[in-house]
Length: 251
Image (cartoon, rainbow, N blue to C red; front, side, top):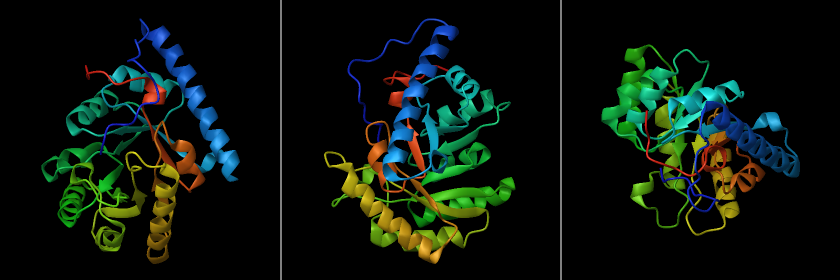
């Protein structure tokens, strides 16, 4: 999973004090919500069809708490060490945690302990490891097959080519402890995201033909959520537009 592309200039200076930060997050959230509403209206969709995932990587648990106060319920993280710490710090909050980064099998046990949905399932070994960990934890984990939309996929970004999706989807669907929820993708770098998301919509449609319950399409970030929603995204992963430019994580 690559870092989210930014739509802003120099790094934002976070406001001093929790009250000022809350006001800043409230303003940013209102702007993001307006963009989502406009995208839904343009696509002839209802706002309720799209889940906003706040991607809080590099930001502290205090920001997660402020977002929860503002009504955000879905939180996305891409590094287990950071995510697990925040999940523990915010265990008293009614949040749904999404793991959106590339996942190593040696981190599966930890991720399964807090994540409700893993967006980056792209290989059979990972499917098996997730299933074993989920069963041992007594949990059922929603899984999305990560689709590589590039013509020449970069292994560093994760994902399986469209032709490999059915095998991974079938493996997830047949593994105890896992539930096939749908697909995820990141738009290729340097390309118009709209055609890429249209390709993802076709892959998602094919998956649903075999697995009718797999209705999630996780696509779209700060810079391209409009195009993603136009092509059926049910979940958008927004970080920069919501929290500001990235900075080193401090717990």
